[in-house]
Image 1 (spheres, rainbow, N blue to C red):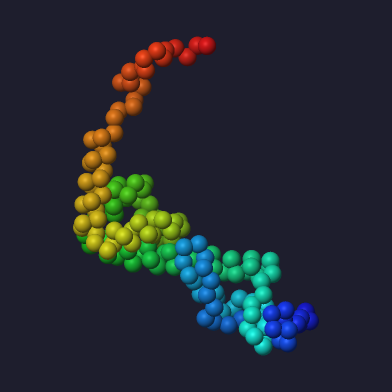
Image 2 (cartoon, helix red, strand yellow):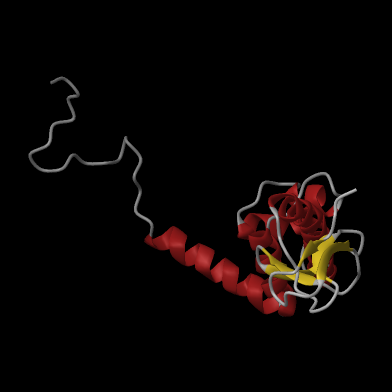
Length: 165
């Protein structure tokens, strides 16, 4: 068993491992609660928490799991608002996802990204309008994007199509 060390913050307390609920830490894009079972060296007098590499790794690993669970919950909340108003195939097409991907992430066969969850959360605020906006943007970009296919491209003046040196 490790001997408790004196707190360098207050000078009187002892730093001992403490596991308790209610502690929060920012992890990537969210403020999350550190699981209650994770021990953090804490002064028994002033409450200062002391991080060492092992504690930081334990917190990161615990928060990684909490983060993915939070993303999955937010994803399912967003999809529950979108599904009554649009097919998942249409949403996948407009968002630029492969067919069946939303089913895959909502059924826990893949982890959703924070960006996808944010994007779907914005769509879920007003699915009909946001999907209509995405369709307009998609049509505009298709009209304005020039063809860059090899067969139709004209060579730039003074540049040869010949690849020889």
